[in-house]
Length: 229
Ligand code: CTP
Ligand code: CA
Image (cartoon, rainbow, N blue to C red; front, side, top):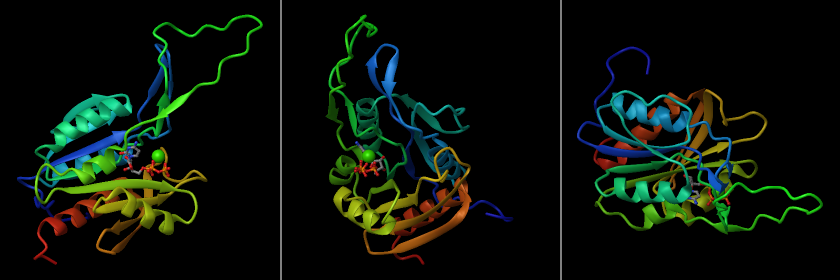
């Protein structure tokens, strides 16, 4: 937003945002993780707070300072994120799942550091599925009119994959961006298309993550008050 006052169109609303990437421990010193920086989720939190919302940010291992005026809950694993998200969603008007949630976690956690043994090949790491937090939030809405927004990073057939994912998850909006070739992960800019469960398609040109965040809040605010726009 260039020039002019920041609108306080989210005043009186409580929004919950997950950010970063979960870590799934193998032992006390090792984990399976991903490259999500948390920047998009933090941009969503900062822009929502600037527009007057009460913001709860569920931060999974993002190495970023807590934004001012935002309630930050630090989590690490997908199971911890699920618990924090279900709790925070109880009185939320919107939940945005920008975090990269690990699809799998090690089936077993070694309470002591895994040691190598001379002449013995390492055992393969068995994995189990993590719960799908976004699908769960979408299916179970504790507050009427609550909106649920997902993010998806796709490498090919971006739009077709995005449409199928939106339907599968049952969320209201899905922000789809193309990744690979240095795009999105860890970058300060993002380019995306926001798909709506109503069939809408909102392209967002390449730009700062705050600009994409503002488009998400515009679309959310419009759905809270369908009379407008
Ligand atoms: N998500 C979630 N819980 C999971 C996995 C993903 O809540 N266990 C959320 C992410 O936060 C994101 C959305 O679902 O908002 C889409 O994540 P993505 O990894 O693209 O979807 P998946 O269903 O895991 O599909 P894929 O097999 O392509 O990874
Ligand atoms: Ca996934």
